[in-house]
Length: 389
Image 1: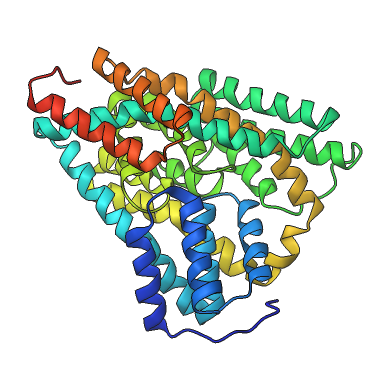
Image 2: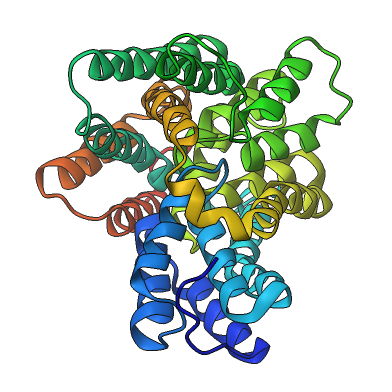
C-alpha cells in the first residue's frame, strides 16, 4: 500500500504529462525512469521517493518492459485504474505511431535510397550498441555477487549466450530454467512454490516447445516479447529474430537488423520493435495486433499486482529467480550479436559499426547520438551512390 498519499492528478493531467514523456522518451529505460521520477517525485510530488524506488525495483522483477510498467504504475498511483489505462497508452502511443510509420516507409516495395541508407547505417551501429548494452548490464549484474553465486551467474550468462546463438527463440526456456534453478538452489534443493510469474510462463513456454500451443504465430511471438522476457529490452531481440527470420520468414536478417535500429531512433521502449515485425508479417493490422499483445501483459501485471508492489521488492523467491534469469538474459543480448551480424553485408557498414564501437566504448557517448550519426552517415553514402543492401 502507498505510504505517502500526495495529491492526486486529473485524467487530463495524466494524458498530457504521460503523453509528453512518450514524445520525449528517447534513450531507453534509464531515461524513462529519470523522466518519471522528475515528474512524479520532484516536480509534482505525487509520489514520495521511497515508494518510487520500491515500484521501480518491483518492475525490474517482472517480465516485459520495466520502464513501461513503471509508467503504468505511476499513472495508476496518481489517478486510479482509468489513469493507468490513459497514462500507459499516452506513454506508449507516440513512439509506436512513429515506428509504424517508419516501418511502412522502409518495408515498402520501393523505399527511397536515402531511407535504405539510413536504416543500413543505423542497423550497422546496432551491432556496437548490443555489445555496449550487454557490457554495461553485465558489469551491473555481476558486481553484487561473489564466490559461488558469481560463478553461477557467469554460467547462466554463458547459457543465455549459447542458447541464443544455437537455438534463437529457445532462449525463453533458457531464461526460465536458469531462474528456476537459482530458486531451487537458494531454497536448499526444495523447489517449493514460486512466488513469481515463472510457473505459468514455463508451462506456456513448454507448450509451444512441444508444438501444442494454440496461439497463431504472430500472437505467440508478441506474447513472448511482452510476457516472457526478463532482463531488459534487448533480450527480446533473439526472441523476435528466431521467429521473424528463422521460423516464419517474415523478414530477412537485414530487415530485422534495421527494425532493431528503428526501435533505437524512436521514443519509447525497445519492445515496440515488435510492431515492425508485425508489419512485415501482416501489414498495418499485424503491427497494431502485435503491439497490443506485447504491451497488454504490462497493464495486467501492474493492475493486478498494484497493491503488492512494495512486498515484491523484498520477496526472496522473486529476487532469486531474477538472479538466475537476469544473467541469462544478458547472455542472450551478447548472443544476439551473432545472428544480427549476419544482416550486415557491406564493407562500409562494418566500418560504421567499428566507428560506433569506438564512440560507445572509448568515448562513452550515448546510444541515441551514435545511432543518429550512423543513420545520417548511411543516408549520405546512399545519396552519393554507395552500394546498398
